[in-house]
Length: 122
Image (cartoon, rainbow, N blue to C red):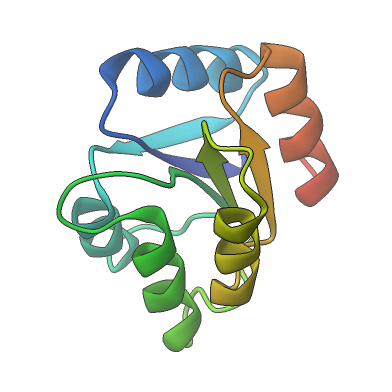
């Protein structure tokens, strides 16, 4: 059975690129445009790993991570936040919220796959 990865980003291009790379590598992908939609989908979908943009409307990546960590069903699911910022304070805030890791945008497909494979076994 394929591992399921949720990709959350308000950018169509980032969502589509990540989905293409992950599906090509055998993962099933569920997409969401913001943290609010992602959290609602998590209630109905088994997800093995979540990749989310840090800055989004409605619910950003940090708020989404905090929401996930506060509920029991997905509390231990790996969460990777995508950021175009290299500022240490935002990365520290993401880790304090419970993010497993951060990946700086723009990222190479190989970087994305290496991160995913390090966090989950396919």
